[in-house]
Amino acid sequence: MGHRDIPVLETERLVLKGPEPQDYPNFKATFTSFRARYMGGPLNPYEAWMLYAAEIGHWEIRGFGMWMIHDKETDATLGMAGGWQPAMWPERELAWIIWPEVAGKGYALEAVDAARRYFYNSGWEGAVSYLDPYNLDSVRLAERLGCVKDKEAKSIGDDDAVYRHPAPAALNDTQLSHGIAMEVSHYQDPAFKPKGFALD
Amino acid sequence: MNAPTLHTERLTLRPLALSDFEPLAEFYESDRSRFVGGPKRPDETWRALASEIGHWTLRGYGRFGVDETATGKFVGMVGPWYPHAWPEEELGWDLMNGFEGRGYATEAGLATRNYAYKTLGWKTAISLVAEGNEGSANVAKRMGATWERTLDHPAFGAMNVYRHLSAEAA
Image (cartoon, rainbow over all chains, first blue to last red; front, side):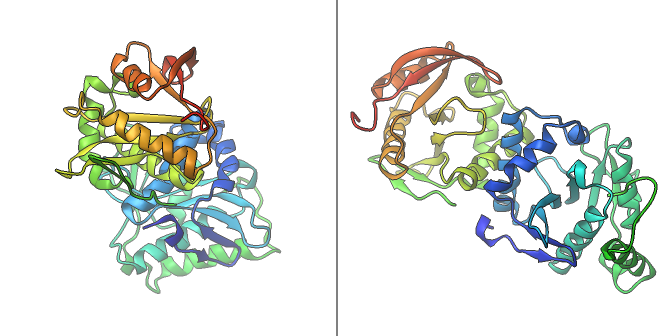
């Protein structure tokens, strides 16, 4: 899939688009920071640029990849979400990262939910997320998305746990899918002001 | 942005693709890759290939996959290269095992220098050659480049900077 053919997904608050050259500074800011500690970072600027280039090349090679998440109103970037399966990945992964300054607004939930529905509609039978057990924000997000830890499945290294996403049928008009839609709609409601621990 | 296809006397320069992964993985696992950032595990090479392809989108140019026209065999990656934090726009070449000594790097290097000057509008270019990589230094010299200085590269260590003939002189 060429870069120009990357599909655009829209949700209530977000637009998911292919990674563009002008979005790189935001990507670099997060991946050279401590925020990237569970994604192989912090990276130096050269490594961050090469990874960003690889995110784009991944679309070309696999036909799917990571979208840049934009605020629909302002077009500002908020993070990335999508599919990820470089070499040595046992299964297709749903992955995400949210820029630290916009965490806690439910953007990752909304974006990953949309990405997962898109992939399931285009034929995926399932997906996993490889998560560092210390990455509690992401572990919680996986659980809110209905994932269950799969201790039998092969992982990508010694550190990461495998969280298995619900199969397409389990998200087809089920209590689980209604619950996810309800939580997404709460975050979309401007009057909703979550208190306490920030969740992505 | 995808690479165009260029032809030289013996070589075809075209966009890199997943089909190049196996020969690249074999090359980057071998000791010959020590001068160009290797050795690398195959999963690291896969990401590097994805980065090479993404370079075209980010910069509007990048390296080409080079095939031996007569046989269709993949002989290497050659062309313009300028990731973030790179000292200057570079012309780079990685030749796969078994294709050395035939002048392929020089032939493809000249074609991509021409592409960089005529199509991309570059005025000058460098090539970084790792200390001890005599084969690559000879390619630079055959192309008319001259040694300019050494550079302590943050990722690759001691590198020799070769300066190519300028766009006007080439």
